[in-house]
Image: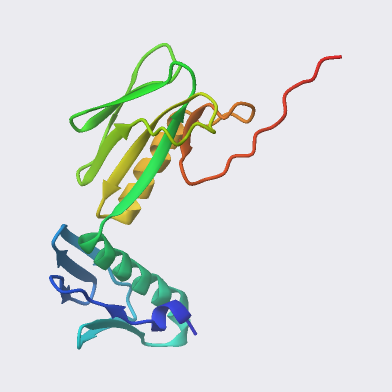
Length: 186
């Protein structure tokens, strides 16, 4: 039995949900999201809650998945999602110019990353991150679609993965990185 799938989703005020056989359309103050519904899973809406029900036990995994996707859509259109990345390394830079981010990451050329629609970025230097050696700045990504936001953060992280010895590169702000010790001379 899927514990996640059985939980009801409370619908905040200002959010409207249109239910069809193959998708949910969630409208809220921050925008509109469409969420796919797997076959065999049915959503019902009553008294300010949304519940997911499945036809049989063969699709138990999809039951929890459908409920989680619907909950992410409701949270996205009301509160939104946010991810932070740290740029670490001497001479490494990032600058937001309209809908693209221009990076200087130690390569022979600048890298331009075009942000997809619905994702916003801003850069800031946070003074509380003095514990990170060679810290440059933090990139804050925000949007209403959790999957798209995570994909953009992963693609930015892949531009220059943190190295194992000094941690230079584009790092997730909330992740702990254990650095390897370097060589020791005699």
